[in-house]
Length: 628
Image 1 (tube, rainbow, N blue to C red):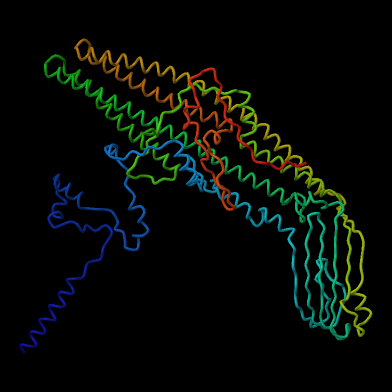
Image 2: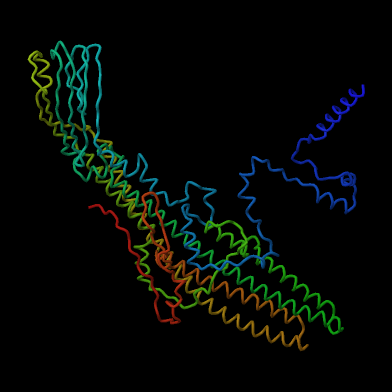
């Protein structure tokens, strides 16, 4: 009995231990961290209970082990910094050329400031677009060239009933009916660039009744168009299988491929422009922050003086409150200059995030991008006639439209060719490979002989072909009208850029004088206030004026550099002055690279000479296909 009781006791303890080791099921919003004391005080209105409850209750859903790999990248990324952590971040001094180089290196998907990749992903350009179009099985260059490829055909057929003896020629059948037989055929054919269709082949088999056994025959055929579809130029424009309104020749495909390359180049130009604009906007954000910090230091000094005077019963308390109010306003201005406000988003964090997005960098890390100045301050003037001529030649929009005009000209030529009647010169030749003595006359005559002739056909009214010519005329006129309107618009855009450059330069000089005057006034008022000669209101007003003047000067300086960028963009020379060109050519990707330093990296190129006209070097244009 003692042993049985001991064994029963051990079994009971084991069951209790196993039951105690079972953990309750985890629920997403379970208050697992609450102890009895906290739960007991959860309904208590005391402040300590509320704080304890807020600290222990977590509404974050636990991450399951299977989700660890999915969230690995986001967990490792640093959380966005706060305004108080601004001075703890490591400065990353980055030049404009380095920023452009980073953007080009990471620009397989060409980004923009508007974030179209989320709203209109199909409209976003990538460096793969020309290769995608070139390899398209229906619209690409290889698809157009495939119409002239050699076609091979072979087959083995056993005829169990009366049927025709098929040849390997592309023109069709021999036209002879035979008894049950075994047939083998093989042949090749192709369409030449002149539109001529040629084919050669042979046929062989076994027939007891007509051929008296085994037989073999060979032959050739040629069909050459004399009017409709004739000529190398037409077949390169429209292709040998062209119909009115459907032209897919190799020349058309090449023009569309060049247009796709220009679209990528235009997107890269806009990317470089956006990088430069955001880069100098970030420069202004830092200068604005520095001005706000200076204002904060001045406000602190004025407030401290007033505190001392109030303590000495020299100044009333409400004056100290005025100085304190300006100090805290300046403190809020510093925080806004760091983080940014809406609308505007001019804070360092906001603009730096925009630049990181354009450069395809992580959204946040322990570094903070610092632009390396200074920006251009010299007087820059451009010759109007030369700038307008460069814009009419270099602007990518006009080059794309010129390819469109060239394509419409080629389509008009093809449409006129299809108006002609179909007149084909044909020739056929076929012969038995041997001369069997047991074959019938019908069999030997069907498989031997030659033909030469001409065929003519055309629609009576030719409505579709005439409509195709009229449509091609209208498309060409439309393309030319659009090009003319683009030229006028580009000239207007260039004129506006010239006006903005002149305004920005004049405003920069005026704001420089305003800043100097405001600093003189501020220093004088600060000295008088320290000596007790003036009230603090005048010092605070001088501080506000000095801060505004400094901010406006930095804004005008950045506006001048942005106007310089916009002028070159309007002239079509932005990539040239930024040193950007095509990188190493590849088959599958269109690459760009920083091939030379930009003008911002060569400040010695600009002298403080107002009489000198600065112009950009004319970039070399790629060769275009001009129809004759």
